[in-house]
Image 1 (cartoon, helix red, strand yellow):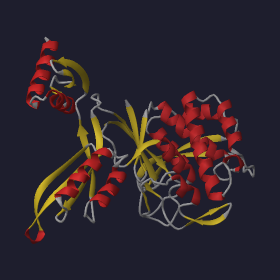
Image 2 (cartoon, one colour; image 1 turned 90 degrees about the horizontal axis):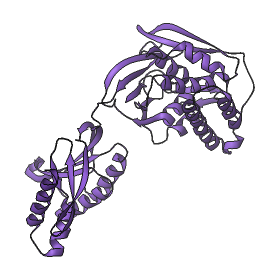
Image 3 (spheres, helix red, strand yellow; image 1 turned 90 degrees about the vertical axis):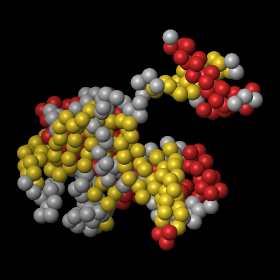
Image 4 (cartoon, helix red, strand yellow; image 1 turned 30 degrees about the vertical axis):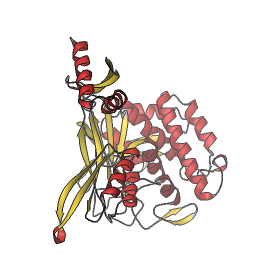
Length: 385
């Protein structure tokens, strides 16, 4: 499966997104032809340029200045009438719906009443549709994105001078990882924020992949201190679908009673932890302590981190990403003299009875647990002969 990764170390905008995709291999000619079907009357240019010595593609939309403000329904109708592929239409519409929700919230109105200004201009409509089309043409099934560099300072808009990030950008990136670094300028625009927030499956480090190619989309300005580009990396996932990215959360504990730790264990598993472990430590001042380590999915890491703070005495956590490899597995049910037991069977042929099933049968029958485990193993082996 093909996946993509946007590295937004200098922010992201609509034109940078398209430039990065074309530079990575998407056909500019096909993209321009499809965008013509939107009926905007715009013309499109692709320029090969450099940013701090780095070769990049600069995508530009040429159109007559317009004072026309469009509502969401009008933009959705333009997209629907076009000849864009169905998946591209859906993604582009989703991006604009998300923009409308953000604009409505920051301006204190409803989605139906939102008037798109800069975002509703012809170039932004083409940028959104073009970015969705570029991803589609490259065959990207899952998109990932780095934390976004927002920039700093102020930006001039139709509403006047506003702080960076613009209010709509800040709203779009609620709960997303962001930071500010480099020049005092708007690096992430509302259009770029909407594309990333809507289309990216996950924000963080580059996921495990076999790299197939990369492209760089140039921003308007050439800053002195950094290459103002958005990098897109096209890759392919491992043929073994067992490669995943997890977050490891760690804390050193030297003043937490065993009863509290036992309760924390139960709560962490109930909240979705993939694994929880404790290791003995000799800590500062010769104190005996424990290393609490929790394995989490990126989606649950914040909830689990909050739970550790609430249920233990720690005042700080270490969080880092790791690649996890898990054998593909299935569950098969076998019949034992004391009842049914589920067997977990891995792709390499290894197997193990489900502990909770064996424990339940042992308690119900009043027999040792190891007897039920032996019966389950024997039943599976008989089934495989």
